[in-house]
Image 1 (cartoon, rainbow, N blue to C red):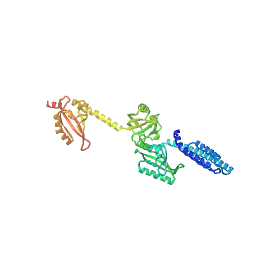
Image 2 (image 1 turned 45 degrees about the vertical axis):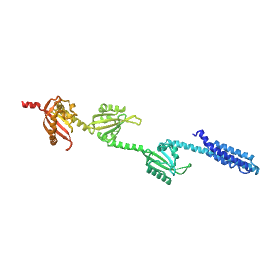
Image 3 (image 1 turned 90 degrees about the vertical axis):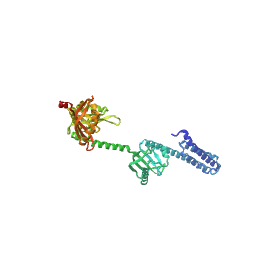
Image 4 (image 1 turned 120 degrees about the vertical axis):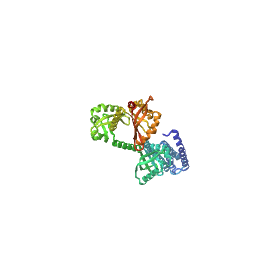
Length: 484
């Protein structure tokens, strides 16, 4: 809406011009003798109201000009026949009236067109895509709010510019100009599925752009209407979906999606293979049907229920599969949420770690056996730091196992023995890969004792040792027995 003060300021200059025109025509009518068609020039004054807002001004000017035509009949110098003068004046008043009615109708039509244009502008402003019209010179004659926001300027500034660059990349801008030229020349719509657009902030976006010829009564020349739909996020989403599908189908992990009733909605090929059936044979069935009611009730269901309240659950357990048999699995349950955060299902990811579990069990059995061996045994890294010590060796030297692990082997010997080992034992060990002999050990209390030690290098490959294995046995008592 235009404020009253602004409207008055806009109307006043034309009113002065109009008043001057009407006054001049009336003076001319007073000078000319009757019989001259002096009322007809008043039509010019009526036409001057075309660009003035509202019908009232046109009506007032029409009435005023008709009144002045009548007044001129009485005040003008005599001349001509009476009936000719009356007919002349009557026709002038009729012409003024008809012209006034025409101008009023034209204003009503123009107002209707303006309102429709505002309605259309309001609608396209709600559309979250770039919509604009450019003429032959690249001037933008119409644009919606999204276009102005994308270019970082107001719509008023945008429409006032003689030429506007839509992209900061000159190559992209030249391609747009060429496309608009083709549309104008061929008078056919043109669509570009992947048009690149670089914003003023340096951000690159991908648009689906459609251009079509556009003509308007108010815009001279051939124009082009452009609608650009931002496809960047959608393309990223499609790419993410393709990647997710490839990961889902190609994963060696068993992946399944369950609904709120513990029924399968989708499974991947690894899940099908483990159970020896197809997706059609699994989808729609319940977890208890596939894995057994006992396993479901005591192992699976309690954890699925935790997941349904929004918690991510991870656990390890043995499962029996139709095709693979007994397998040890690490299983993760993740809530599947809607865009509003509501849990609508469960994503199950199960990884077969049977080989790792069996290796762990084997290491545990070996460690159990080694730890209870009579002889001492320890593992050292390449820097001589204890990685593992069994109970027999720790007890032999008077330490707890935790007091040795992470410390140097030098803790078990005095300074003189450490020097002898470095200069006499290590060169042989490095050359031959192993060494066996007697050393003088030192307990935590400082007591010294004779110990038979075997050292063996562990190699990752020929050049770089990964550490060594040490076995030891106290021989002090045996020596005493031999001496006795």
